[in-house]
Amino acid sequence: MGFALSDMTLTSSAFEFGGAIPRRHTGEGEDVSPPLAWTGVPAEAGSLIVACHDPDAPLVSPEGTYGYVHWVLYNIPASVGALPEAAGGYTGGTNNFGNTGYGGPMPPNGHGVHYYYFLLLALRGEEPFEAGLTLWELLRQAEPRLIGMNRLVGTYERS
Image 1 (cartoon, rainbow, N blue to C red):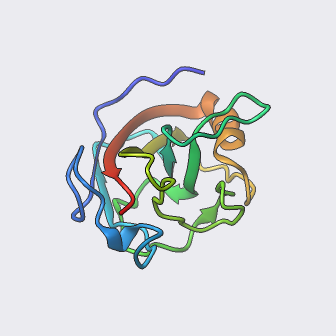
Image 2: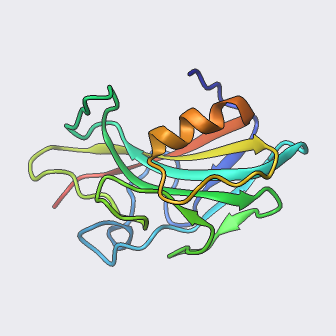
């Protein structure tokens, strides 16, 4: 499954691309999702996926997945252009904390800086996906409908 970046943009008023994610949006803070906004969604898109993945986390599964998934949110209508801070609603997928909400960055003590990839994917069609899917299950199902993708990368180092 290969994904190429598209012309969509994903931004946050909480941090810049490559910048530090504020403590408020981490497991050491209030642990609320950052506000996100996007533009450039393809006209033929019907729905969106937002996720947050830490590829630097020391976790490899028997299925061959890697890193730590902090957030999976999907069945977002393509007409939506932003998520507020502490976003709810839509359909939650299962993260590596074992729940369906946002769980902010909190790398192991002494592990250094981790890079967090907030992903935005645009899909053809509006057919909903069932609740509770992991990021990897969702990507396998969504791949045939994928028409656009981009990311916002933030950093965090545990204090």
